[in-house]
Length: 151
Image (cartoon, rainbow, N blue to C red):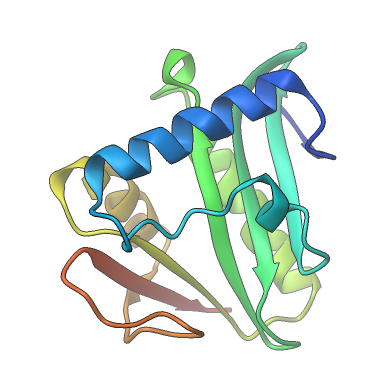
């Protein structure tokens, strides 16, 4: 598996992000979908990576700089064809290594509270993330779980 910074121009990345947003909308009510669209992922504060094997897209994820000490994980997604192959684990390790390289003190994330998001919550817990209060511009709601890890 190779992890590389992606410029968000590849059609396969667009398709995976479309799948991601559709899935978020299916499992979260309007107003509770916090996934970034292409323009949001192109912001200067966001670094977006893809995971590929050969040329096949396996997954993606991003790190958004909230300030010089804090980052936020965004748009973690494994392609349905590559579930349970360690894609998310490898990508999360990479993102956390980058956050440490940047000398962030903390990395936060928002994920869903329903059963559809349970695999994601378990992954983050396995890495040491714990639940926290809403951060940045998020507001508390019953459909979001906020998590953090100190680096």
